[in-house]
Length: 292
Image 1 (cartoon, helix red, strand yellow):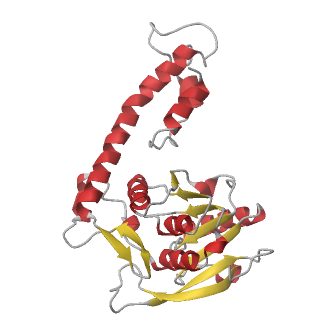
Image 2 (image 1 turned 90 degrees about the vertical axis):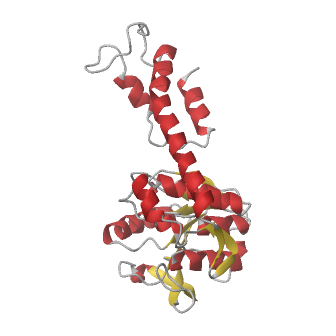
Image 3 (image 1 turned 90 degrees about the horizontal axis):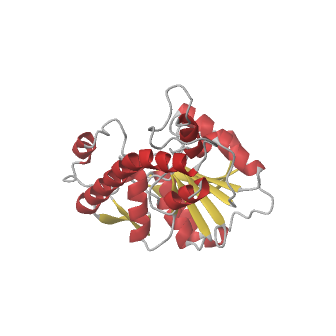
């Protein structure tokens, strides 16, 4: 089995393989390289991409992949048992797995060795919910389009795009726990979403018609990277939409207001707290109508 076949095999599984660089591993294991080399029984002359080397590289990866599968299964079991599905305030057509007082989410994260991770994915943020509401109300914006949800979290925007009839929805999320929850949320809402773990702020744009950013301007460095990313996608011809409740790092001079909603934000009491969250177009996009 050649390299492409190995990569295809892993890509066909639900395992996220973004962290694995097969060619780098093959070079690292090449005979004669300091610190490298496969066991003597596997060594052979010739190209370092020979089948034996690829089989050895895949064998090395299997332990890591097995551990990742076990981790994902543990996350899924916890989410199913402790985070019941509940309608999203402001977008009740969508149900997400959400924690409650007895979920002990912080304790579970500590037990999983992930206490340093903020479980932002477990809660609906106002900017993301507003953007989801906007797409649900104006499905023509995404119908038959390829849509990217950048920093997808629990997937509320991605799910809204899929419900709106998008031809393909890609949800990019770098947190492994969030990706598991996102897949579960998409399944619970009966939609198909392709979940990837790549950091898309550091690479060239992928081929999409719409890029949606729900509530990512909450920290200065992240805001800078998202700004640069949106610029690249707009230059590549994509429509860029942003949902945000007006957090400090939001570059307001780069935005055109399309709509706003009064919604509770993360940490607010949904019975009493609501704030204005705007929907914006990033720069002017030829041929785009705010009415969808």
